[in-house]
Amino acid sequence: MTDVKAKPTGPIPPYFSALNGELAIGGKTASALVAEAGDTPLFVYSTDALTQRIAELRAAFPEQLSLHYAMKGNPYPPLLEWMRDRVDGFDVASGGELKLAMAAGVSPEKISFAGPGKRDRELEFAILHGVTLNCESEGEASRAFAIGDRLGVTPKLAIRVNPSFDLKGSGMKMGGGAKQFGVDAERVPDLIRAIIDAGAEWRGFHIYAGSQALDADAIIAMQAQTLAMAAELAEAAGVSPPHVNLGGGFGIPYFPGDKAVDLNAVGGALGQALSALPDILKDTHFCIELGRYLVGEAGVYLCRIIDRKVSHGETFLVTDGGLHHQLAASGNFGTVIRRNYPVAIANRFEAEPVEVQNVVGCLCTPLDLLSNQPLLPRAEVGDLVAIFCAGAYGASASPANFLGQGPALEMLF
Image (cartoon, rainbow, N blue to C red; front, side, top):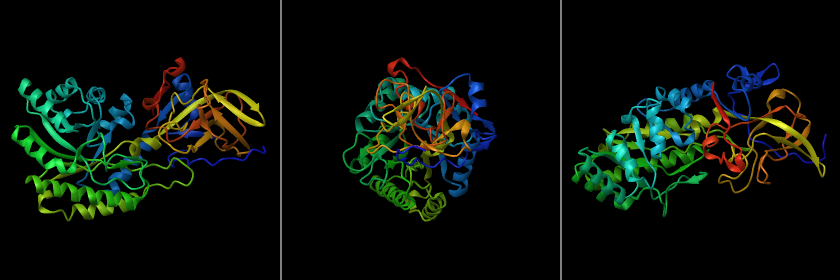
C-alpha cells in the first residue's frame, strides 16, 4: 500500500458487470472486445445500456412526449443507425451532422437544425430537404426567406428562443442574459409574424436553457418556465406553435458524490403540466432532446498500459490513450476543478484495490491526466484501463490529431 492519499472517483454506471473477473460490456469481456477490434485505444458503446436508458425514459415520461437524440453527444454512424428507429427525432447542430444523420437513414422530416453561424450552403441544403431550421437570429431567418424564394421551396422555420431564465445548477448555461444562441424572448413575437408573412412554414419554438443538471427540482422548474414562456410568446404573436422543443439538460453522474437524476419525478411533473396546458398550447406537439443523457453512460474508453513508472514516490500508469480521445475526462473540457471520472482496471475488475496510481496518456504534456491518484488494483504493463461515461463528448469532442496520435477505434456492441 502506498502512502500517497487516494482521490475519489465517480460512480461506475449500473449497466456493467463482471465476467471471469473482467469488466463485461454486453456479455463480452473487455479483453475480448479489444481482440475483436484489433487494437487500443477503443471506445465501446453498449447497445444493452442504450436500450435500458431509452426504456427508462419511455416509462418515466408521458406517452405524448417525443424523444429526440441530440447528435452532438455522439455522431458515430453505426450509433446513428441504431438510434434511427428507436427515437422520434434527431437534433443536429451543423451541416456536417445533418449529412451524417441523413446518411444513417434518418428522414429529413424528423430532423431539426440548430446552432449559430449556419452558412448559406447549410441553410440551402436543409431547406431543399425539408429539414426544420431552428433560427438563431432575425438575420438567419431573412437569409432562409431569400434562399427559399430562390429555390422555389417553402422553408420550415422554428425559432430558437434565448429564454430570460437558465437551468439552475447546470454545468453549461445555454440561456439567460446575452448569448450567441437564439433570439431574445422579447423579439420573438415580431419574428414569428415575419416568418408567417414571408410565407414560410411556421414550426414553433426551440427553448434550451442549460445542460448537465442532476437536480430534478431544477429541471422541473425549468420545464415549467419553458412551457409558460412558450404560451406567453404564442399569445403575444397570436398564433399557436405547432411544435415546442423543451430542450434537455439532464445530467449523468461523472464525479464523486454525483447522484442520478430522478427521472420519475421529472416525468411525473411534466405529465401533470402537459395535462393542464393553456388553450393556445392544446394542439402543440412537445419533445425533449437528449444527447449526453441517452449515450453518455453507455460508452467505455479502453486503453492499454504501456509503461509503469515511479516518480518521487508516485506510481504512473502510462497508457496508449489520453486527452486526445478523452478531453473531458482529463478535465480540459469546461470543468473548473478537475475531478475523476469513474475508472477501473478492466481485466482486473473484481480485484481488490490496493494501490494509488496515476493514469496518464501518451502525450507530451502534463495536461494528459486521465485519472488523478485513484485507488485501484495493482496494474502492470499490458493491463487494460477503462474510463467510464465515455459515450458522449468523447471521440468527436477531443483533439484526436494532437501530436499526430490519430483517432481511437470505435465499436457499437
